[in-house]
Image 1: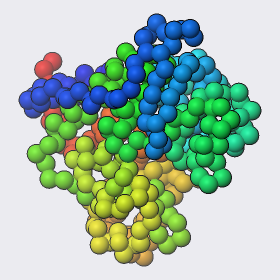
Image 2: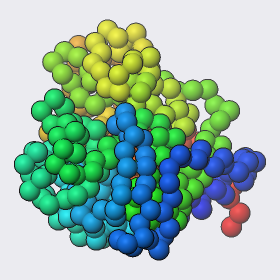
Image 3: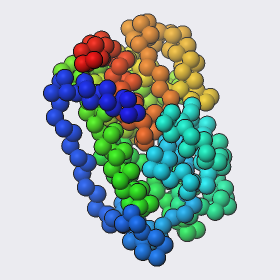
Length: 331
């Protein structure tokens, strides 16, 4: 990541990018980094549609989602994580976090049950919003004395707020601030290269559901990644974060590129084949020209991969610009 940031910041200087804005302040109490069990300052935060508070330092974290595990590891909290879940959504951790990520024991490969979470002995759960439904709610865990923080960010500001809250809760504010500064600077630098270009139309293909395509809507952080990379989500008008669209909808949208999610039981290769064999979709220019962008599912879950995801998208959609920018760097 540090090499990526150095490279992209060099690019940004070439394009006269001004310094990035600091994240908006979060209304929350800030405990001292020296806080102990006896001196811990309670932290309040807004999450999952309500205000909540932590009055004592959590000691046993359960991370539900590979992106959640990566965030906690980046904050230096791997030794507090007693288990990770949803590992079937991961193709491997970010290289710089691999050692810490791999050191965390696996509680379950898929979604944990209520009993598994309770029996783990955790006192704090940082979990993807994908975990919760009518059969398992955050309230069920809170009723059993477990603090729940839902990973639900749908844009940069809400993601930075999540990381800030976690930094405050676990007294690692400096690490949180560094993460936000690095991610923001890298994204701003990438955008500086392509800001004059006409937006590229992008379709997100998560999976096929019968004769429909499951895609990302407007309230999805992936839509913001696409915008930072110089594109526009062709289904950004959809109100839900995830929704199904018809083949006719896709043909009418006529995307220039298709982002294809790669994960267990829904591989990139299988979806490319399905596109190329579909009676109608095979005739789209982007399909005929194989204008596909492969993304591991973890990359589109809010967390540590914002900058690397934007970089991957921009490099694919505007490859020539980044080649020129790299060549122009001082030796």
